[in-house]
Image 1 (cartoon, rainbow, N blue to C red):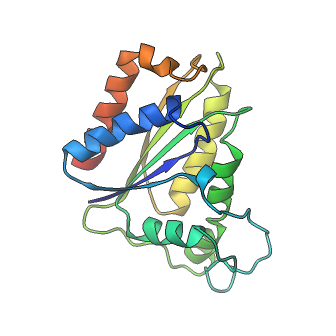
Image 2 (cartoon, helix red, strand yellow; image 1 turned 180 degrees about the horizontal axis):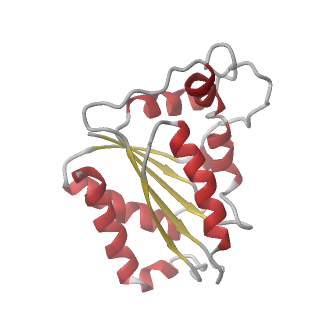
Amino acid sequence: MKVIAFLGSPRVEGNTEVLLNEALRGVREEGHEITIFRPSQMDISPCLNCDGCVDTGRCIIHDDMEGVYEAIRRGDRFVLASPIFFFGLPAQLKAMIDRCQAIWCEKYLLKRPIKPGPHGRRGLLLMVGGMKREIGFECGDATATAFFRTISVPEHKRLYYKQIDAKGEILRHPEALKEVYEAGRELVRG
């Protein structure tokens, strides 16, 4: 099974990365192949809304998204890990998601959705943020849900952790680390 992970945080070794690493530890222990993308360290231009993909389902911009598109097409399981910034996903991750407009066009306008492999396609969404209220996580989940459905991932599990902000603070929450580890194992078992 091919597992594709997207690390949405620009903070190196921050709470989001710790959570993602725990989930992927569960995946690795089950013996599956993992590819990780870090949009904040990639050359990804924002979507230009130019309609260049409308007739072909292919983006006219040539940058690091080409590797992301390829991985999305061949993946079986997807993990999206992100902090919440001002009630949404960080700009670098959002740029990557917006560039999936080409896949949206291919799926919905050209009627060529990504076909599931023998394992099907499922996702896992991990979010963390300093806020006390849940609205920011709901907003992040709405964007992630649109992304997952566009790339033909019909279902995903959601885990989020609020009131966790300082770098490394998630390490003081062993129950969260255990939960994401188990979620990673569960993702590749079903």
